[in-house]
Image (cartoon, rainbow, N blue to C red):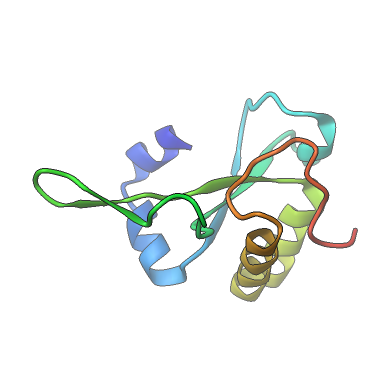
Amino acid sequence: MSQNAASSGQVRAMLDKYQYITTELYDIRVPQEFLNQAGRTGVILGVPSKKVPEYMDLPISKAKIVSIILLNVQELKYAIERGAEGRKILAEKLTQEGGTVNSLDRPSVVLS
């Protein structure tokens, strides 16, 4: 994801506009239930953390700290099908389930 953010330069602007964004990543070594039919892994960015601050002060300016949460196939499909509202609901459910804690054993927050 860091490579995508660096090459695009638009991640911050997208987060400012949409609050949450999802994307798919290639060549991520995860269990099969996290890979869609194209072999990509979904992630959601921008879910607030209960443990990590939203910003960090740097010498020149503030840096936004952005969470990245691994999505299983059902969650990614939910976000794709429902767009902005789906991302918002996913973020709320993930926050209720512990927020920015990633786990390969985490149960899905949506029904399949």
